Length: 152
Image 1: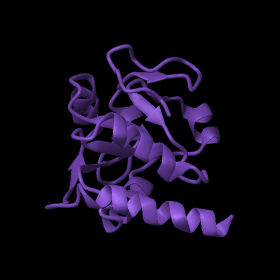
Image 2: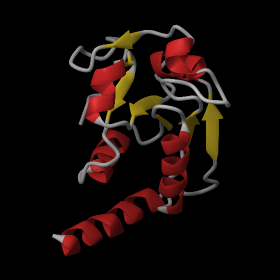
Image 3: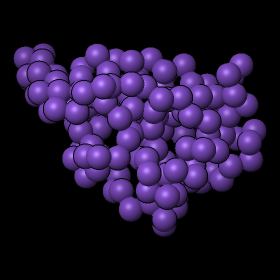
């Protein structure tokens, strides 16, 4: 199983390497991220765990991909393949994990990455999605109909 995971990592690097030119991680506030997701300018991905999604709800425009799941990179790759030219924006609870993750994906050679600061609950950097009063959906409710990207 570990060999399969290593093979997948190598494949992911090869796929992402084609998008690595001038890779730069952009920081974005939740309100701007929502606006850009609705306009089709970014794909927003909530990387928290399922129990976190259930506890607080999720941004109405976000796809859900648990960053601790074994198939995380496969799902991110599936989203990227649907949208090869659209930046991927990541959000979490406070912005810590999304900041870390965007850095790790950049190291793999992926570009077009956005870290949504403040996450769902807020931090020193930003008050976050919920405190800004942005729309939240229950984890089992559909994504906002304006979002055309499909959940992997």
